Image 1 (cartoon, rainbow, N blue to C red):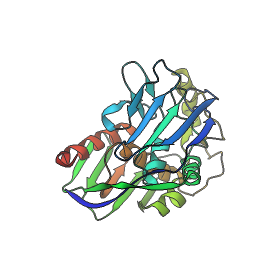
Image 2: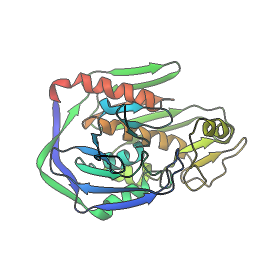
Image 3: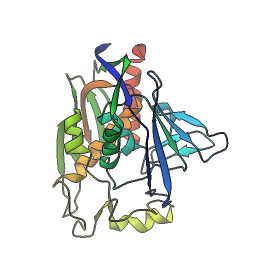
Image 4: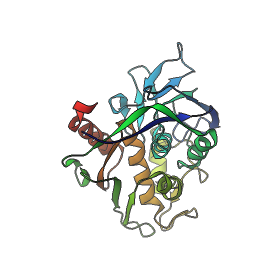
Length: 282
Protein backbone atom coordinates (compact mmCIF):
# COMPACT_ATOMS: atom_id res chain seq x y z
CA UNK A 1 0.00 0.00 0.00
CA UNK A 2 1.15 3.56 -0.48
CA UNK A 3 1.23 5.73 2.60
CA UNK A 4 2.24 9.08 1.19
CA UNK A 5 2.99 10.86 -2.04
CA UNK A 6 5.10 13.70 -3.30
CA UNK A 7 5.65 15.37 -6.61
CA UNK A 8 8.11 13.70 -8.92
CA UNK A 9 11.30 15.65 -9.52
CA UNK A 10 14.00 16.11 -12.14
CA UNK A 11 16.71 18.75 -12.63
CA UNK A 12 16.24 22.15 -14.27
CA UNK A 13 19.28 22.00 -16.56
CA UNK A 14 21.85 19.45 -17.64
CA UNK A 15 25.18 19.03 -15.88
CA UNK A 16 28.46 17.43 -16.96
CA UNK A 17 31.35 15.94 -15.00
CA UNK A 18 34.59 14.28 -16.09
CA UNK A 19 36.63 12.11 -13.75
CA UNK A 20 38.40 8.82 -13.02
CA UNK A 21 36.97 5.33 -12.72
CA UNK A 22 37.82 3.72 -9.39
CA UNK A 23 38.17 0.20 -10.72
CA UNK A 24 39.03 0.66 -14.41
CA UNK A 25 41.49 3.51 -13.81
CA UNK A 26 40.08 5.33 -16.85
CA UNK A 27 40.88 9.00 -16.17
CA UNK A 28 38.61 10.57 -18.78
CA UNK A 29 35.08 9.38 -18.11
CA UNK A 30 32.42 11.98 -18.81
CA UNK A 31 28.84 11.82 -17.61
CA UNK A 32 26.09 14.24 -18.54
CA UNK A 33 22.86 14.33 -16.54
CA UNK A 34 19.79 15.57 -18.40
CA UNK A 35 16.21 16.26 -17.27
CA UNK A 36 13.54 13.71 -18.17
CA UNK A 37 9.76 13.96 -18.20
CA UNK A 38 7.64 12.52 -15.37
CA UNK A 39 7.33 8.73 -15.12
CA UNK A 40 10.58 8.23 -17.06
CA UNK A 41 12.64 6.99 -14.12
CA UNK A 42 16.44 7.03 -13.87
CA UNK A 43 18.13 5.86 -17.06
CA UNK A 44 21.75 5.31 -18.10
CA UNK A 45 22.92 5.67 -21.71
CA UNK A 46 26.28 4.37 -23.01
CA UNK A 47 27.19 6.98 -25.61
CA UNK A 48 30.47 5.22 -26.45
CA UNK A 49 28.76 2.10 -27.78
CA UNK A 50 27.12 1.53 -31.17
CA UNK A 51 23.46 2.60 -31.10
CA UNK A 52 24.04 4.22 -27.66
CA UNK A 53 22.00 1.68 -25.67
CA UNK A 54 19.98 2.74 -22.62
CA UNK A 55 19.06 0.88 -19.45
CA UNK A 56 16.73 1.70 -16.58
CA UNK A 57 18.22 1.91 -13.10
CA UNK A 58 16.18 -0.84 -11.45
CA UNK A 59 17.19 -3.77 -9.28
CA UNK A 60 16.31 -6.32 -11.98
CA UNK A 61 19.07 -4.84 -14.17
CA UNK A 62 21.92 -5.47 -11.71
CA UNK A 63 24.52 -7.72 -13.31
CA UNK A 64 27.24 -7.64 -10.64
CA UNK A 65 27.76 -6.66 -6.99
CA UNK A 66 31.49 -7.40 -6.80
CA UNK A 67 33.06 -4.43 -4.98
CA UNK A 68 30.41 -2.13 -6.52
CA UNK A 69 26.96 -2.26 -8.07
CA UNK A 70 26.85 -2.72 -11.85
CA UNK A 71 23.86 -2.39 -14.16
CA UNK A 72 23.74 -3.85 -17.64
CA UNK A 73 23.04 -6.73 -19.98
CA UNK A 74 24.98 -9.73 -21.26
CA UNK A 75 26.66 -7.42 -23.79
CA UNK A 76 27.55 -4.32 -21.77
CA UNK A 77 27.39 -2.77 -18.32
CA UNK A 78 27.92 0.35 -16.22
CA UNK A 79 29.67 -0.20 -12.89
CA UNK A 80 30.06 1.77 -9.65
CA UNK A 81 26.64 3.39 -9.98
CA UNK A 82 25.87 3.45 -6.25
CA UNK A 83 27.34 6.84 -5.26
CA UNK A 84 25.51 8.70 -8.02
CA UNK A 85 22.31 6.81 -7.26
CA UNK A 86 22.68 7.69 -3.58
CA UNK A 87 22.82 11.39 -4.50
CA UNK A 88 19.67 11.02 -6.61
CA UNK A 89 17.90 9.14 -3.82
CA UNK A 90 19.04 11.61 -1.17
CA UNK A 91 17.79 14.58 -3.22
CA UNK A 92 14.58 12.75 -4.25
CA UNK A 93 15.24 13.01 -7.99
CA UNK A 94 12.95 10.57 -9.81
CA UNK A 95 13.55 11.20 -13.51
CA UNK A 96 16.97 11.65 -15.10
CA UNK A 97 18.98 10.56 -18.13
CA UNK A 98 22.64 9.86 -17.38
CA UNK A 99 24.78 9.74 -20.51
CA UNK A 100 28.18 8.15 -20.00
CA UNK A 101 31.04 7.50 -22.42
CA UNK A 102 32.56 4.50 -20.59
CA UNK A 103 31.61 1.47 -18.55
CA UNK A 104 32.06 2.98 -15.08
CA UNK A 105 30.71 6.04 -13.28
CA UNK A 106 33.51 8.38 -12.13
CA UNK A 107 34.45 7.95 -8.48
CA UNK A 108 34.84 11.75 -7.87
CA UNK A 109 36.26 12.07 -4.32
CA UNK A 110 34.96 8.66 -3.24
CA UNK A 111 31.71 9.99 -1.82
CA UNK A 112 28.39 11.35 -3.11
CA UNK A 113 29.26 14.95 -2.30
CA UNK A 114 30.40 16.05 -5.78
CA UNK A 115 27.31 14.59 -7.45
CA UNK A 116 25.06 16.09 -4.78
CA UNK A 117 26.51 19.56 -5.24
CA UNK A 118 26.32 19.35 -9.05
CA UNK A 119 22.67 18.31 -8.92
CA UNK A 120 21.87 21.08 -6.47
CA UNK A 121 23.60 23.57 -8.77
CA UNK A 122 21.51 22.31 -11.69
CA UNK A 123 18.39 23.00 -9.63
CA UNK A 124 15.61 20.62 -8.63
CA UNK A 125 12.37 20.88 -10.60
CA UNK A 126 9.04 19.57 -9.35
CA UNK A 127 6.88 17.85 -11.94
CA UNK A 128 3.14 17.52 -12.35
CA UNK A 129 2.94 13.81 -11.48
CA UNK A 130 2.85 12.24 -8.05
CA UNK A 131 5.40 9.78 -6.73
CA UNK A 132 3.95 7.30 -4.28
CA UNK A 133 5.97 6.27 -1.24
CA UNK A 134 5.24 2.73 -0.12
CA UNK A 135 5.22 1.17 3.34
CA UNK A 136 7.15 -1.80 4.65
CA UNK A 137 4.22 -3.71 6.13
CA UNK A 138 6.02 -6.69 7.64
CA UNK A 139 9.63 -7.64 8.28
CA UNK A 140 11.73 -8.96 5.42
CA UNK A 141 15.38 -9.91 5.65
CA UNK A 142 18.43 -11.30 3.90
CA UNK A 143 21.35 -13.15 5.47
CA UNK A 144 24.60 -14.60 4.26
CA UNK A 145 26.94 -16.08 6.85
CA UNK A 146 27.48 -13.45 9.52
CA UNK A 147 26.06 -10.59 7.42
CA UNK A 148 22.47 -9.48 7.97
CA UNK A 149 20.05 -6.99 6.48
CA UNK A 150 16.49 -6.46 7.74
CA UNK A 151 13.66 -4.14 6.70
CA UNK A 152 11.04 -3.37 9.36
CA UNK A 153 7.90 -1.22 9.30
CA UNK A 154 8.51 2.38 10.33
CA UNK A 155 7.08 5.88 9.86
CA UNK A 156 10.13 7.18 7.97
CA UNK A 157 13.25 5.92 6.25
CA UNK A 158 15.78 5.07 8.94
CA UNK A 159 19.00 3.12 8.47
CA UNK A 160 20.91 1.48 11.31
CA UNK A 161 24.28 -0.08 10.51
CA UNK A 162 26.81 -2.00 12.59
CA UNK A 163 30.28 -2.24 11.04
CA UNK A 164 32.38 -4.99 12.63
CA UNK A 165 36.16 -4.94 12.40
CA UNK A 166 39.13 -6.08 14.45
CA UNK A 167 41.37 -3.45 12.85
CA UNK A 168 43.01 -1.38 15.62
CA UNK A 169 42.31 1.98 13.94
CA UNK A 170 38.76 1.20 12.82
CA UNK A 171 37.18 -1.17 15.30
CA UNK A 172 33.43 -1.60 15.50
CA UNK A 173 31.33 1.34 14.34
CA UNK A 174 27.61 1.98 14.78
CA UNK A 175 25.54 4.49 12.86
CA UNK A 176 21.84 5.32 12.86
CA UNK A 177 20.26 8.06 10.77
CA UNK A 178 16.78 9.08 9.75
CA UNK A 179 17.32 9.80 6.07
CA UNK A 180 15.84 13.09 4.96
CA UNK A 181 17.36 15.48 2.44
CA UNK A 182 19.18 17.61 5.03
CA UNK A 183 20.65 14.63 6.85
CA UNK A 184 21.79 13.04 3.62
CA UNK A 185 23.50 16.19 2.35
CA UNK A 186 25.28 17.03 5.60
CA UNK A 187 25.86 13.69 7.34
CA UNK A 188 26.02 10.97 4.68
CA UNK A 189 26.95 12.37 1.24
CA UNK A 190 30.52 13.47 2.25
CA UNK A 191 31.53 10.02 3.55
CA UNK A 192 34.08 8.35 1.28
CA UNK A 193 34.63 4.79 0.15
CA UNK A 194 37.49 2.99 1.85
CA UNK A 195 39.97 0.21 1.31
CA UNK A 196 42.46 -1.80 3.30
CA UNK A 197 46.07 -1.54 2.14
CA UNK A 198 46.47 -5.29 2.69
CA UNK A 199 43.87 -5.97 -0.03
CA UNK A 200 45.05 -3.59 -2.76
CA UNK A 201 47.52 -5.89 -4.51
CA UNK A 202 45.00 -8.73 -4.75
CA UNK A 203 42.28 -6.38 -6.02
CA UNK A 204 44.52 -4.93 -8.71
CA UNK A 205 45.47 -8.42 -9.84
CA UNK A 206 41.73 -8.93 -10.45
CA UNK A 207 41.56 -5.70 -12.45
CA UNK A 208 39.90 -3.75 -9.63
CA UNK A 209 40.84 -0.56 -7.74
CA UNK A 210 43.16 0.49 -10.59
CA UNK A 211 42.10 4.13 -10.18
CA UNK A 212 42.14 4.24 -6.39
CA UNK A 213 44.15 6.95 -4.65
CA UNK A 214 44.18 9.05 -1.51
CA UNK A 215 42.13 11.58 -3.49
CA UNK A 216 39.17 9.25 -3.86
CA UNK A 217 39.28 6.72 -1.01
CA UNK A 218 40.09 6.38 2.67
CA UNK A 219 43.13 4.12 2.95
CA UNK A 220 43.38 1.90 6.00
CA UNK A 221 46.95 0.80 6.67
CA UNK A 222 48.16 -1.98 8.94
CA UNK A 223 47.94 0.10 12.10
CA UNK A 224 46.43 3.44 11.12
CA UNK A 225 44.09 5.30 8.80
CA UNK A 226 46.30 7.17 6.33
CA UNK A 227 43.89 9.97 5.34
CA UNK A 228 42.37 12.60 7.56
CA UNK A 229 38.79 11.51 8.20
CA UNK A 230 35.79 13.73 7.52
CA UNK A 231 33.85 12.04 10.33
CA UNK A 232 35.15 9.92 13.18
CA UNK A 233 32.75 7.19 12.02
CA UNK A 234 33.17 7.82 8.27
CA UNK A 235 33.44 4.10 7.51
CA UNK A 236 29.98 3.21 8.80
CA UNK A 237 28.47 6.33 7.23
CA UNK A 238 29.76 5.27 3.84
CA UNK A 239 28.20 1.83 4.27
CA UNK A 240 24.89 3.62 4.89
CA UNK A 241 25.51 5.70 1.76
CA UNK A 242 25.91 2.48 -0.25
CA UNK A 243 22.59 1.17 1.07
CA UNK A 244 20.87 4.42 0.05
CA UNK A 245 22.38 4.08 -3.43
CA UNK A 246 21.49 0.42 -3.90
CA UNK A 247 17.93 0.90 -2.60
CA UNK A 248 17.44 3.69 -5.14
CA UNK A 249 16.93 0.79 -7.57
CA UNK A 250 13.44 0.16 -6.18
CA UNK A 251 10.51 2.52 -5.71
CA UNK A 252 10.58 4.95 -2.74
CA UNK A 253 9.54 3.44 0.58
CA UNK A 254 9.42 4.12 4.29
CA UNK A 255 10.74 1.68 6.86
CA UNK A 256 13.63 0.87 9.17
CA UNK A 257 16.66 -0.83 7.61
CA UNK A 258 18.94 -2.63 10.07
CA UNK A 259 22.28 -3.86 8.72
CA UNK A 260 25.18 -5.82 10.17
CA UNK A 261 28.26 -6.19 7.93
CA UNK A 262 26.11 -6.02 4.79
CA UNK A 263 27.42 -5.07 1.34
CA UNK A 264 26.17 -4.68 -2.22
CA UNK A 265 25.19 -8.34 -2.70
CA UNK A 266 22.97 -8.38 0.38
CA UNK A 267 21.58 -4.94 -0.46
CA UNK A 268 20.47 -6.38 -3.80
CA UNK A 269 18.76 -9.34 -2.17
CA UNK A 270 16.87 -7.16 0.29
CA UNK A 271 15.81 -4.76 -2.49
CA UNK A 272 14.23 -7.69 -4.35
CA UNK A 273 12.37 -8.77 -1.21
CA UNK A 274 11.03 -5.29 -0.52
CA UNK A 275 9.89 -5.04 -4.13
CA UNK A 276 8.13 -8.40 -3.94
CA UNK A 277 6.31 -7.45 -0.74
CA UNK A 278 4.59 -4.47 -2.35
CA UNK A 279 4.49 -5.82 -5.92
CA UNK A 280 0.78 -5.02 -6.21
CA UNK A 281 1.68 -1.32 -5.98
CA UNK A 282 4.44 -1.42 -8.60
